[in-house]
Structure formats: C-alpha cells, structure tokens
Amino acid sequence: MNKTINQKAWFFVIPVFILVAFNAAIPLMTVVNYSFQETFGNNVFAWEGTRWFKQILLSERFHAALARQIAFTFIILLIQIPLGIGIALTMPKKGWGVPVCLILMSMPLLIPWNVVGAMWNIFALPDIGFLGHSLNGLGFDYNFTQQPGDAWFTTILMDVWHWTSLVVLLSYAGLNSIQPAYYQAAEIDGASRWAIFRYIELPKMKKVLTLAILLRFMDSFMIYTEPFVLTGGGPGNTTAFLSIDLVKMALGQFDLGPAAAMSLIYFFIVLLVCWVFYNLMMKNEAQS
Amino acid sequence: MKKYKWLVPTLYIIFLMLPIYWLINMSFKTTTEIINTYSLWPQKFTTENYVKIFTDSTWYMGYVNSITYTVFNTIISVAAALPAAYAFSRYKFLGDKHLFFWLLTNRMAPPAVFALPFFQFYSSVNLFDTHIAVALSHCLFNIPLAVWILEGFMSAVPKELDETAYVDGYSFGRFFFKIFVPTIAAGIGITMFFCFMFSWVELLLAKTLTATEAKPIAATMTRTASTSGYELGLLAAAGTLTIIPGAIVIYFVKDYIAKGFAMGRV
Image (cartoon, rainbow over all chains, first blue to last red; front, side):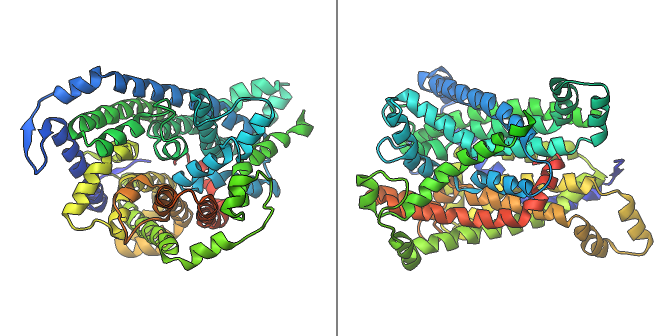
C-alpha cells in the first residue's frame, strides 16, 4: 500500500509509546543500572564497570545454562516444525472435522503455563501418573524426578504437547490460502505427492513457517514456568534453562549485579536472532 | 494411503487429550485415593475438591482476580493499539520502522529479565498488589502483539475506503468508529482473543506483582502446593477449572482463528 507521509501520525502512536516505554524502558534502565554496580542494600551503590559482564561471560554456570537452553530450543524446533506441518497436511479441509480439530488442538495453548507444568507432573509421576506408570509397566526404568535423561524427555514431550498446535494452526492457515488452481495444474502435469509438497505447498507456507519458527524460538528460549513447575530445574541443574537460572540468581540469591548483567546478555542474544529473522521476514513480505 | 489420513490428526488429538483427561480424573478423586491407588477412572467419585474451591474465598477469589486483570489488560491493549496500528498501516512518519521493531522487541524480552525491576517499580509507585499493576505489566508483550495483528488486518483494507468517507464529509472520528472499526471487527476479535490468551496464561509477572489482594489463581495453586502439603486432588480441580475460560473463548472465536492466522500475523 502506498502510504502518505504524515508526521501527525505520531499522535496516534503516543498512547502505545507511553504504555510500553513505561513498562519497558524504566525497568530496563534499572537492570542496566544494576549491571554496572555493586549494591550493599539501603540504596548504597558502588561503580563496578564491566566486572559483572566479564564474570558472567566467563562463568561455567552461565555456559552450562546457555548450552542447555540452545540444545532444548534446537530439539523442540526440530520436532515441532516438521510434526506441525505433517499434522496440518493431514487435517480435514472441510466438514465437521474442521471446527473439532481447531477447538481441540487449540486447547493446550490456553491453559495457564503453571497448570501445564502441574498437569504434566501428575501425568508423568512414576507411581500414580498415566505416562510414568505405563512406561514402567512396559519395562522402562522411568523416573523424571531422579534421572536427567527422563527429565529431559518429559520436558520436551511437554513442550511438544503444549506448542505443536501453534505450528499446526499456522501451517494450516498457510495451506488454506493456496488456490485450487495450483493443485489442478499439478494433477494435469502428473506431479507426485512429494513434488506438490516441495514446489507448491512449501513455498506458499514460507511466510507462516518463518513466523512459526520465530515465535517458537522466542518462546522456547524464554521458557520458565512449565519446566520450573515440572522439574524445578532438576534433578540437580540438568533442566535449569536460562530463565530458571536467572530467577534463581536474582530472586533466590539476590545477586543483583551478576543477575542484571546476565539479563542483558540474555536479552541481547534473543534480540540478535530475532532481528535476523525479522529482516528475513520483511524481505519475504517485500517480495510477495 | 489417503484412506488412513484421518489417523494422524486423531492420534495427535488423543495425545493432546490424555494429560487433560488425567487431570480431570485426578480432580474427582480424594487425595488418599490418588496417592494410594493407580486407576484409570475415580474409584470413589467425589466432588469435594470442587466444593472446597467454590466455598473458600482464597480459592475462588483467585479466579476473580485472574479474570479481572486479564479483562483490564485486553481492554487497555486493544484501545491503545487501535490508533497506533492505524497510523502504522496508513502513514509514513519519522522513525516508524524503528518504532515498530522496538515494539516487537518487547514481545521478545524474557519476562524473567523484567520480574525484579517490575516489582521495584510498581512498589515505588504504590501499585503493588493491584489488578491494574498486573494489567499494565502484561501490556509489555500484549500491546506489541495487538499492534502487530491489527496492523495486518488494517493493511488488508483498501485505502479508498478512508478517502471515500472523507469525500462524503465524514470527520476522522466518525469515520473511524462508524466505518473503519466495524470493517475490521473480525481482526479486533482475534486481537482480543490473543491478548486474553497471553494475559491468562502468564504467571511469572502476575505472581511477582501480587501478594494477597490481586493474587492470580495460578499463584494460589503453586503456593498451596508448597505450603499445605501435597493436596493433589485440590490442585487438579483448580487446574481443571483454569481450562474452562480458555475453552469458552476458543468456542466463540473458532471461525476467526483460521482466518486470523491466515493473515500471516501472530
């Protein structure tokens, strides 16, 4: 759309600007403030320069949490994106099945995150949970509160349960926007099922898939509540992802300086990846 | 192969429903039954967990609090985002692209980063433990989202609509509320749905900013779980009840969801 230049448009943006600035800029300044200083309580501060940043960047604890976080995000993207596309491809296109699928599949998205954690806790408990009991009944030695491997398996399964539907809904919307003419042309050419997917469906889904990957990256990288309720970061620290580790440091140990420095590094990583994705997305939009 | 296509969504839905069923199953059992026996359905069916929630004010007030700040937040977010999204979809102005990206960065900020500063900030302005504090703090991620979705819907409306209205002698205000808002009603519905959803499911900020007066149901649950032993039946019943508002909202917007996603936003 050709937009007119109008500086007065700023007046329309002012309410949003004030509300978000009030919420983002002021607290962010507090974080920046802490990250360069040492506090002894009673509002006494001492300048520390970049000491906390160096400490965090060199600390093994941060490296370990970051490595766990990257591994987790990578695994869930690897599972959820193909699975979501696959389910969207097999979903009914019309009839009574459509609203049934949409409603039932959206359900996990609307459950408060700590309830998701609590629900999976009850579901996976080895003695009284359906998942835990069944797995043990099948001969697996499964106990997510004690074995790191099982804790990871449960956390990933929970996230797949919680968020795959978002990828499904996005892909489904992308598929629905394809004109029937494309399929007819493919049929005349005698294209295989794979060719239809590769050359018609996948390119048409590019935009929504970029968005799905972006959203899943952001939200899985910030994950806190669900694993906190499910495993509490344990056993040991094996499922303590970045946010869990950060909250532990800030509110648990009250190490404000290092926690603030870690917050900024954390935010910076998310921002950097999202900036790359945002530019990719805008480039796609400009092309189409 | 085509014949068995329905199997995939069916199996997926069964996988989705299993943990939910297990939660509902637990909510109708007594705590002793949960701990001592494993059964696929309640052996001694009881509704005492639900009775407790509906008669104890610390429990049911949690729901009232959660719904209150969620509704506040939805109204504030959509009301503020409407004019801004209009500006982004119709006009070019100094710094518009940067402002749009800056708004989106707030959707990307990990809430864990903001928890402590929010606590200090809202305490210092005497808003700690009020519904409005939680509603305002959720604006951090809901306003960018609302602007993003609404901008998508508004850009799909041709600009000729605006121009014709002005030619017909409509003032901006009359045009906006009488013509433009009804035109994008579906988009506003979707936006409200997503604002409601993200405010309803968020816990970290809501928990950090409240103590007793505005405590969300989710926080009541975690605190109960840790203070009064392990009352699994009660916890399951409370969890089951938190699913209901979401289910009601989904039912009303089911026709719009697919359409909203099709805009390529959200």
